[in-house]
Length: 384
Ligand SMILES: Cc1cc2nc3c(=O)[nH]c(=O)nc-3n(C[C@H](O)[C@H](O)[C@H](O)COP(=O)(O)OP(=O)(O)OC[C@H]3O[C@@H](n4cnc5c(N)ncnc54)[C@H](O)[C@@H]3O)c2cc1C
Image (cartoon, rainbow, N blue to C red; front, top):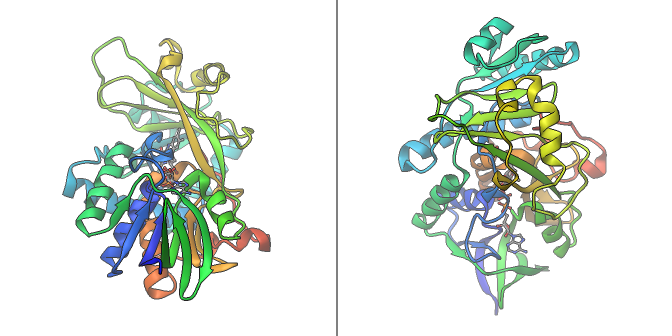
């Protein structure tokens, strides 16, 4: 007979660890995390920029952010591990279309209780005097946004999960998932497991894990690059996470000095490649001066760039819910560039799906797996 558990979580990144923690907090008895690498948090979670924001354009993402920011604040206060700097995000735009989109998102955020403020160009420049003012039309700012250390989030979630008696099995790859009485059977490393529910939290590999169970999940890996730019002088004061909506470039200052700079090419195809894209520095150099001329003067060093994989979906929303083909398989994947920040909400949603059969905290309808087959998707446009 296979070993039995209540819930087996496939993937020990921020999403899987958060789900396991919330499942135990909700009273689920036997929860196991199955991670193929030698330690948890080595996948996309280890490559993230650590940005946290409520400034999205859809209700689903804003509500996930609002819940998660409060939980990340609590977790940072409780563990001291997150390094959560609430510098705010400053979104800057210089086009008429950009301003209209920013206004609509701002109004939606406010209607959902997020305290985003609308800034004139002069007010934006007070917050970020280094921004190039030419053509700037408007900006928004949310003070509880900011950035944190993704490794700290992994460490805190792992510690909490283990304190709650979650069993974390590393070096354990899930290679088969099959229907069984009362749930699903898994092949995990060299062992057989029977689980009431299986949570697919395999990040960029979630489509592959879904396929093991005969479920079609459009989550694909897309390479994203980041650059660190050293400052010649002593570290300056922290700045908001500044986003140039006209080009998609975002910058922040590290607490220890220097800037982290990001730009995502929307035309990048799916890829498992995690080395830095050789075109990245040139693409960045062409755009960074639009709003951030101070960075044009500092040297971009290819040795201080890194890349990782966004687990992407066609509508830039995560997939959270039971697989239509296998209701005991709960997908919780496809978080794109917002998985670290949304991990608390993702975990809570999974725990409620298991214990209540649906979520009482979130409306998961826009995130349901069936939306792609039904052709009923809402697209998130604030993709960075
Ligand atoms: C350059 C970059 C910048 C980013 N910036 C941000 C940011 O500023 N803010 C933010 O919130 N997010 C950001 N992200 C996105 C964020 O990193 C991801 O959305 C998040 O880490 C996804 O977490 P996950 O747990 O789903 O995936 P992962 O961390 O990849 O975890 C999935 C785990 O599943 C394991 N696994 C896969 N298949 C199997 C199997 N068959 N059996 C067992 N284990 C398996 C993997 O080994 C992996 O450890 C960024 C990502 C990148 C690449």
